[in-house]
Image (tube, rainbow, N blue to C red):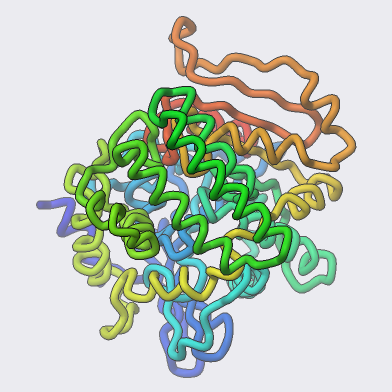
Amino acid sequence: MEKLRDFVSVLLFLGLIFHCGKVLALKSEDGSEEWGYVEVRPKAHMFWWIYRSPYRVEDPSKPWPIILWLQGGPGASGVGIGNFEEVGPLDTSLKPRNSTWLRKADLLFVDNPVGTGYSFVEDKSLFVKTDWEAATDLTTLLIEIFNKDANLQKSPLFIVAESYGGKFAVTLGLSALKAIENGKLNLKLGGVALGDSWISPEDFVFSWGPLLKDLSRLDENGLQKSNSIAQKIKQQLEDGKFAEATDSWSELESVISVSSNNVDFYNLLEDAGSGDIAALELGLFQKVSMKRYSKYLTSLRSSSSSPGGGDDLDKLLNGVVKKKLKIIPENVTWGGQSGDVFTYLSGDFMRPRIDEVDELLAKGVDVTVYNGQVDLICATKGTEAWVSKLKWGGLKYFLGKDRTALYCGSDKTSTKGFVRSYQNLHFYWILKAGHFVPNDQPCVALDMVAAITQSPAT
């Protein structure tokens, strides 16, 4: 209860930043946290939250890094899910997280795109419709935050993404580089990390059926149905019918759910529950698929850090956290516009971003790809498929290299994963992890982050 009071009692504000009579940002008394809104376009408001690490090590040869965490969805909240359920300092019970990524870097969480989490638009026409529009808004936010803070400019920024956030990460990476080159953005881009990322939807939908068949979760009939819809999606993508491909993706997920007796798309070793089977059998594909996706948006799942699942997260973010932050408008509900975010991006949802990864590599940006072994929605099989399509000149040498086994701590008997690196491309295979790698394998994820950021922390 004392921790809860400490968390809420932020009349401890040192800094109030005003602009045109409006409070845009607040800062904790000790300066360890800062949060606020950036109006990235008129009437489009993006929320951000920075944590400064108590583990910071000052090393002139290795600047202390900062990680920008981008959640998926589109429409999932980094401030909520990434922060309280995966890598932030506190879990959903407001207890300290031993595996917080603050051990290796400062953390910047953003509710992106506008309409996600605490971010909001005053007019529905302001929702973004493409990944590039989202990247432009994020670049505007970075300009507002970094250009005004000389200390932040000393830290290399690493964009780390999960799920659909990977598409935002690669478009933002290129957009930010352009702004840096043009002198509009004062920061150093350290690298981009793509965790279980939706970079090539076509490769993922083609991976689902064969993978589940090999694991006895689908039979021949289920595989045939899956492959048939995947072929339809492939043709729609070739024809540029991206919105139609999104509808077919929804249909494919539903067919796989019925054929597999509701496999969990975020951990293929688990069941997602059978409550939706009747609706699926009636052909209500879109309704059930969106319901499943909304469970991701509000993280309605059980986890070690969130015993009560997403209901607790929703109460937390719309209750004690909103009270602490003090600048969330009364009429803004955390996650209240998330469904609209997905709807407006449905025309870009199935569009691949392999070319953008290629462009980052060609520009010399460090790109890390990491994947959980038992993820289905962004299965490793699909990730390996799109990586093999890269036109990057180093790909042949990358694919020819042997992998290195990963362990954690002093235990060198239990393999936690593998890594392969060549020049500026790195690939991590994380064993016994599903879609939410930092949650499922916190130790190896933290070691991976240390390697990505070259953090001076021990």
